[in-house]
Image 1 (cartoon, rainbow, N blue to C red):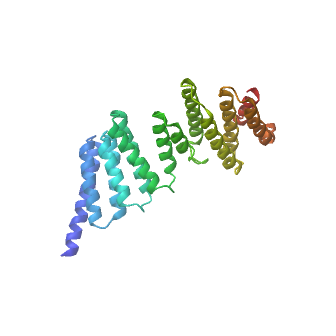
Image 2: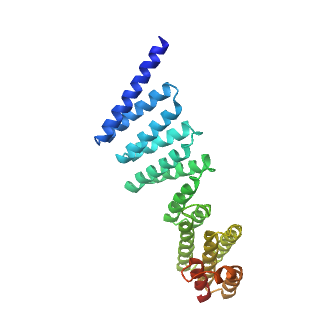
Image 3: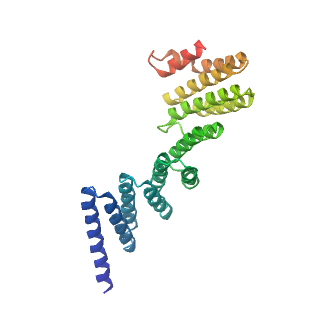
Length: 278
């Protein structure tokens, strides 16, 4: 009798999945998502954890396609927290952040902003070792930058690894943050000393980390970092020529060998030419 009941449950699961697929192909996304949810629960009853997760993930994806972003975010987050050891748990959780971000974009209220921030911070707390943590740092950096919290934004952008696809964009964002921060301080007749100190500390860390690798990415980032730091010193009131010169001397000395073997089209050479023209 027990085997018969399990067989009935398994047959019901197959029927649910088939029904969900038909609804999806008919563009009846909301109904398809509901049936995928039922199928996920049935798979859980059968003890098919991996299948339950996959069906739940599909439900979240369909809800996203139906633009039911709040529901999708809740589904992805629940999946990740209920199955933290699953290979796609971090992916599900970062999808929760993405869809929560879509809610915020549509309705930029303080409540939605806080919910978005919380899921991103939760991601860094629970999935810090995952590759998806770089994406969470990127999204938090953008959020902080949009609110003029430049120090916090730089802290997140700076945590994005050299190997991450967004590493160049993140360093561009850091430069943008320091430029805006300096501009606002000057307009308010405030000292820029603390900003310059923090920027120097940040870029020195970039120099140390990028020096460990001889990849093209590391060389490009090190060259661009030196140029940006020198420009910050030159934008001070009054301009700090000696500090800028020291940065450029250090940059050019360390990059001379790379520059002599680079073509005119190489971004490293471009960065070095910019440095010499400052």
